[in-house]
Structure formats: structure tokens, C-alpha cells
Image (cartoon, rainbow, N blue to C red; front, top):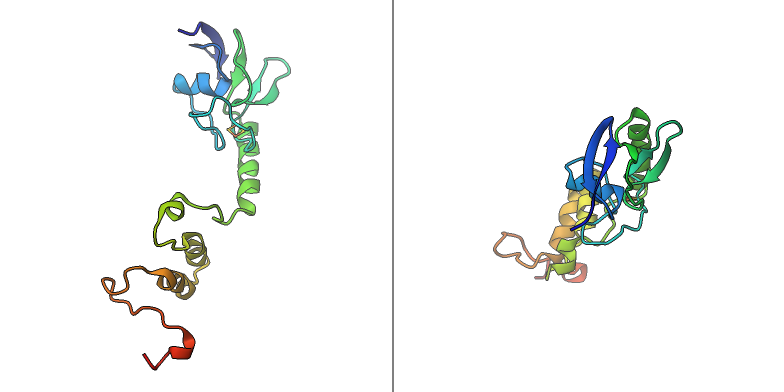
Length: 160
Ligand code: FES
């Protein structure tokens, strides 16, 4: 069993498990710290999102990524100051500004119909519902049960 250490978090003493990162130790004690790229299944995160930033230190606190920084005895940590919240807001906006649901979603990776859900969602978000339904119809594996006619290539349209 890991050693318990005492730290000061948001102006109160807290006993946490040592030998972990700040993020892991605080999460285990129920202290919420925003995180995006950290996954509990990983020993360490890659530290790329920057949302887990916390202030460490008393007189001259410095910003550290909680998911990368080991927690140590007597550490003084602030997790939710106005400055940190503003930083996280800006950082999240930066992450989202060029990220238009273009990751390969788990449903696409495992869907035998391989419907392009990202494009569908993008059209819905843009209010282009006609284009959105076209995406679904292009690959719809169940046109009959859903009452849709299968898409017919344009040279054959009207003859079938
Ligand atoms: S959780 Fe993403 S940088 Fe720490």
C-alpha cells in the first residue's frame, strides 16, 4: 500500500496517496480537476490538453500540469482560481476551434455500415439537414425497414 502524505488543497489539509501525480491523487480523494487527455488506464498522460493546470506553491505559485507532476508531501495546490478558470476556457476554445468532430468516432470504427457520422453531425450542426440526411441515405444498410428507397446512381435514376 502506498504511503499517505499530507498536502494543502484549496486552503484545506488533505491526506492523499503518495507516489502518484497530483491529478491521480486528487481525483482519488474526490477533488475535481478538469482533464481531457488523461486516461485512468494510463500510467501517465501525454500532457497535451493543458486543462488540468493547477497552481503549486504559496508565495510564488507556478502553473503545472496536474497529470504530469508528482505530488509531494506538504505541497500547496490551488485547483480553481479565477485565473485558472479563464486559462482553461481559452485553452478549451483553442482545442475546439479547429476540431470539427473529425476524429474517427468509436461508433464508426465498429459500425459494419460505416456511416460517416462525423460528416452527418457536421451538417446537422451547420443546419444543413438536407445534406445530413443524404449522408445517412448514402450508406443506409436498412433502406426497406426504414421506408427509404436505396440510393440509385444518377444515370439510372428514373429507369429503376
Ligand atoms: S489532462 Fe491533459 S494535460 Fe493534463
